[in-house]
Image (cartoon, rainbow, N blue to C red; front, side, top):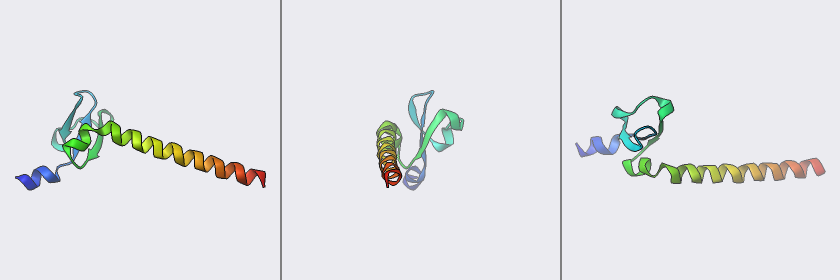
Length: 72
């Protein structure tokens, strides 16, 4: 049973405001995930914030390269 628990994908249910295993997840527009563990699902905001920062950095880098190309 322990291997089933570790292989289960977890989701953050936006309506219930709690982590749920894949068997209990709602519609796709009401959940975030999948996450590998319940803890990761419960800390979804850390993952989202990190991803958003990485995307913002990539956008800034892209804009900088693009501006440099236009100046040459």
